[in-house]
Image 1 (cartoon, rainbow, N blue to C red):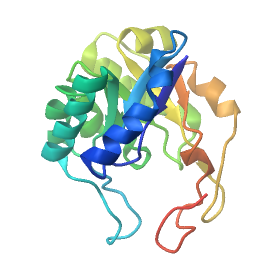
Image 2: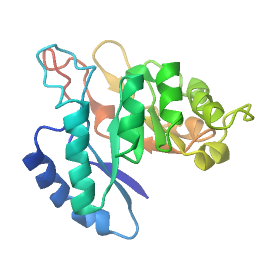
Image 3: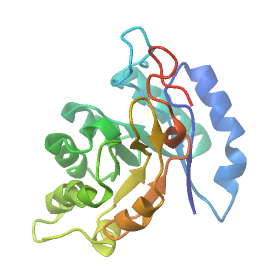
Image 4: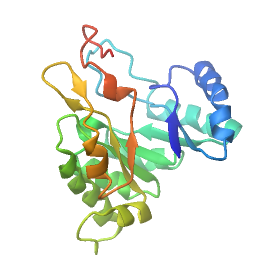
Length: 208
C-alpha cells in the first residue's frame, strides 16, 4: 500500500521536520510504501496574497535535509519545465498539478528525468481522457509505446491521482468509477484530502 503524507507546502525547516518526525510510524510500517510530500511552491493559489512557499532552491534544500535525516522517499509538485531536472535530483516523485495535467511540455520535462511521474487528474477532466496525459509521459520514456496501459505505466514509473471532479460552482465530488477507469492505463492514487475541497469556499481560499 502506498501512502503519501506531509504538509501541503513548506513553511519552514522547523515545522517540516516536526511533521516528518510525526510520520515515522507510517514510514517504518513494512506494509506501507511511504512518501513524504511537501511543495516548494504552490503556484496555483486562489489569491495573490496566499502563501506559496520558499521557492525552488530553498525548498529543495529543505527536502534534502528531510531525506538525509529520515531516509524518506519524497514527492513534490512542479509547475514549470525548468523545475523538473533540479527537483528530480532530490525527490523520488515529480507531481504534475491537476490544473496542469494536460501541459505537454511539463509532462515531457518530468518524464525526461528518472523520477516517478504522478499526474493529478484535473477537476475538469473526463477520467478516460487522462490516458492521453499518461501516454505523453510513456512515449517520452519509450517512443515505441502506442497506447497507455497499466503494465507499461507501472514499468515506466507513471501514475495518476484522483482528486475529485467539479460539480457545479465551488464544489467537488468523487465519482469512484474514475478509479477503475483510470486504473486501466496507470496505477491510481486517491487524494482523499483535496477531493473534499470546496474551491474558493473560504473567500479566496479553498475549504472543505
